[in-house]
Image (cartoon, rainbow, N blue to C red; front, side, top):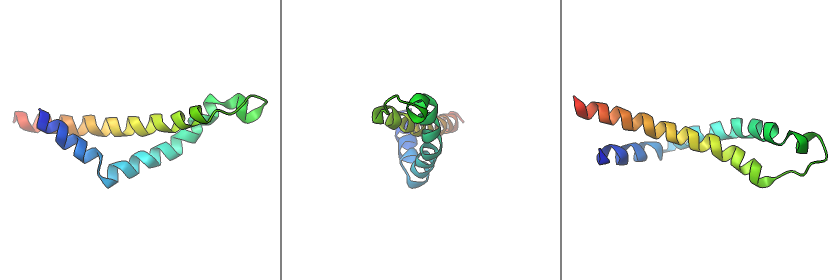
Length: 81
């Protein structure tokens, strides 16, 4: 199973998976930022760069972790046959 983890990690760190994760973060991140900081966008509240950064980091991490889990599962199922 350790080999499956290493294989899945390599698969998620290739160019295609990283591009997809960055694209998802670029689309979903600003939407989450507006939702989470609506008061700062529309009113007097202060804008938090930390919250904005985390709003983009979350979909990036979710995309890469789902990539990892999918590849790991595929490898593990292939090893059982």
